[in-house]
Length: 203
Ligand code: GRF
Image (tube, rainbow, N blue to C red; front, side):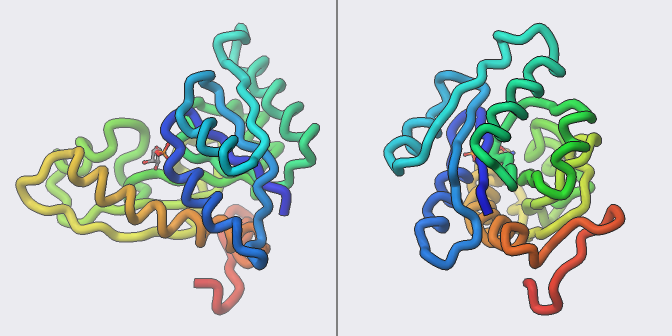
């Protein structure tokens, strides 16, 4: 399936998906990496992997609707069928999320529905959890609240700081996201009536 990855920065999850997509039997073909920030480090990595890159700077638009319309036009122009958010730090309008419903996924560094938004690892440690992790979910209008596709658990080590937990969680993200993207791209996990349905042996 023709797939775009949307980033805002480092792009390490993007890189994990790009690495997986090199395999001939990987069901997602990465046709575009798009960033809302011109300086995103991930853009260089994508370009060196031979993937088309595009910057749509949100600062050039007067509101979210204008930015999202430009995003949508770029995705359509590239014939994109699946949108993969990977550290993409812009909230998307309800209209945009509705249009791409079931065809847009995100990864978040907590075990949702706990700890949505930003400063996730600080939130988790402040709550005293012993296990954190990461979640891949379909994107809906409500931030970090769409139907869950996959999760991985990461133990929280008493006494560690948010950067330590973030680093160990990121390693789990790099395993989970390529697998989850493949499931969705192959249609083996899909959105149906507001729930994720899986082929029997999907995970
Ligand atoms: C990841 O922790 C991801 O879960 C969150 O933002 C971070 C992006 O990191 N949404 P990277 O750009 O993929 O390296």
